[in-house]
Image (cartoon, rainbow, N blue to C red; front, side, top):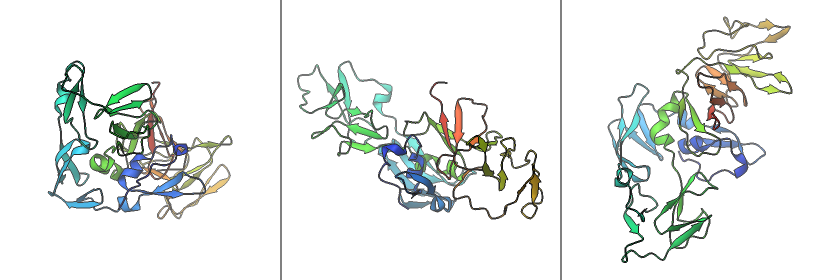
Length: 319
């Protein structure tokens, strides 16, 4: 299963798509340039007793090897997790992580390596480089890493031929490691948490078992109207608990055959075989686009159904 290789147009952001792209979900478009949702059926159908990475499938115990661009070594398919097979790796510890370069010295890298391959020191007469890259108001030397301010999903290394763009062989798309390190989180229905809306990679996950949350229906033209847990809500006070144990004001006991009447309206749907393609799932909860999860214990995190099927959470930058 291949993943989306080209980043979406700029207008598709700040709705965040990186996790979908990396785990191989296919975008589903409407009339506009941005996906309305993603088809993750192939990802969700993966065998939980096997590991998957970059289109390859591994049995438990199989060696996956070193993944230098992601600073991971001795990776293998690990079957010890209760949530299913996961890829376990040792972290590559680069010398420059622990021992900063000497004054006036700069680590130099190849684009796909984790650790520096050499060091350039300005005060050494035998250290000479004629290749420089002007990026904004900064000048970088050959082999020096830089991160373009206009594309948070790119990592670059100054190279001969750099033309001021991020589309050449001097830049690559950052791999956030969603498939490598977090596939089991998505299998568990967890939502990625991003810091702000302009970051490429998430900073963590919020999972259904972390705490009991509720759906807050989106307000459209002053009225709350959504479909959650198979019932048509027309009042924002009707909230279905993520524990699946209770529904305020409306009792779901007897569904799917029971027709429930509330406030003069009738609510009934087939509980057993709903179509959730246009909804986000979070544990037992189903959210329409723009529905939110009730505020959690962390008031700085806001979780919304922006692009199904996964909820996306944003850590506010002003908290």
